Image 1: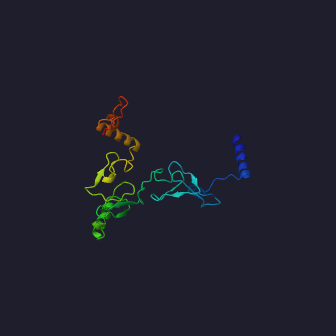
Image 2 (image 1 turned 90 degrees about the vertical axis):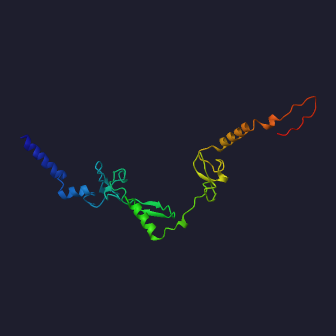
Image 3 (image 1 turned 180 degrees about the horizontal axis):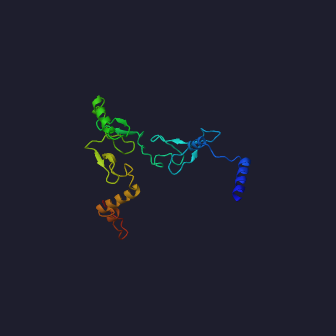
Length: 210
């Protein structure tokens, strides 16, 4: 008796609210994205822990899968082909020419070898190193090159002191104070104080050179 009552209630609900099971076509459409009225609207995120319906999905350049805004980056969905379209530039050590590579294993050495055999690799075009100081274009050679012990930059003789090339790891004011203190100690104290005589009996002090 109770079973018959439940069947009648269920049939009444189906008739009033038009409750029905979705067809296989509708289920497939829902998995791909969109709605019944707009089947091409949006796509479901293909991340294993997401499957969110996104109306503006992103297609990964590496694995060609569709992801939502949160999982669109290579790192967020652990893309196995993240280096597929990566671009890398190598510099020829002989002529200083920049050559673009795809970033694949072995591609760099193969392109450099092809460049060396092409005849475009001219050692005379190699860029010579210049002083790292601002607005200084002096070419560095073995005789005029100095390496700063603090910031390890290569500079010319004119800019060898930290204050001259704006050393990034040293406070210029403190360096000048230390330099003057070291110079004073080297000279044995303040030369003005060391050679200053005292006035006696109203006589004018004599001038003594340092």
